[in-house]
Length: 463
Picture 1 (cartoon, one colour):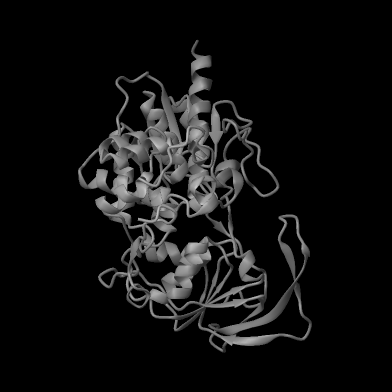
Picture 2: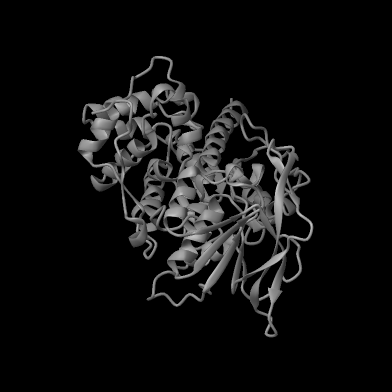
């Protein structure tokens, strides 16, 4: 065994997985997990914990794996995380816990994410549940949204003995975990539904098909329904577009719509009658993780797929692993290029895109070099489907129907980073509803901070 290198993780072959929606990564078995765990140095001043937005005691759970005590490892993780099977699959560990791993200085960091996934999957297969509160404290809290922020906040509050109800607008719980991330990265029934069940096992109630701001308002929940505090974790589901000619044509989707139809409405299954235009030749505009998800989904639906991104590969915001998998599966990357017009046929349908070539100029506010158009470099790409993956913003319905709730110019709710408190007493917020579109684990971190903030708020109020 070479302790400087990770134990390899088994995956489906690219040419096989590109034609199915089964999970790409197959994960570790017990022998592989124990071997990988043995690489951990069990640092006393563990930098990996500092890199984790939910502060999992990583050396502790890995030590348990090393000894083959997987149930103990699961309970160690569950003290900090409500969604270990999700995080083990979709977190950007390379820039967080694994990015801080001491092993990574001279070799490869410990595969913390893959070990977390192994532990969570083992616990699910052996029907191990997280520990619930010994007694209730008699206080009611409402959580808006059942995505990663909402589930985390609800789970943490339930462990403290609160009576928690989650209100979800859609017909299935899970938020972006259910509608946004493809099946081949995050299985819905085997993983997401089971993680939601674990939160319910803590005593959390979930009411679906409830649109806050329409079905009921936050003010009504607090004034009429007896909820003493509210956490808003409604995400950012309002898609952005470029504002270029032709965007209203038939065959132009937001990545949100395309992925929601395919994931939550099961359009990828032949037995489901869910209309979706798979496309023969698809252009995905954008370079983030959602763009990779949309591109790889379209590929599995039979399309030739081009990712058009206005910067170079070095600036792609998507995880390196996702870009690597996309390339392996045959996704074509048209970098340093940007659409200026969607081309439309006589029937109002997409027939392609006019694209201009770009070059990188001076760095912008984010530190990335700004793309600059090269005059006279326009050309056309043939396509019958264009998917816009340019980010999302919060739906303004909640803020517009809640008295005294401040938002910023981007329509994001203004909340304190430390505890999620807002301008309205008793109302807390976190995740994409506050920051705009970000990662699952950052949303979880915000949910955890808000749970702590709500507990302190109600404890002080009831003294």
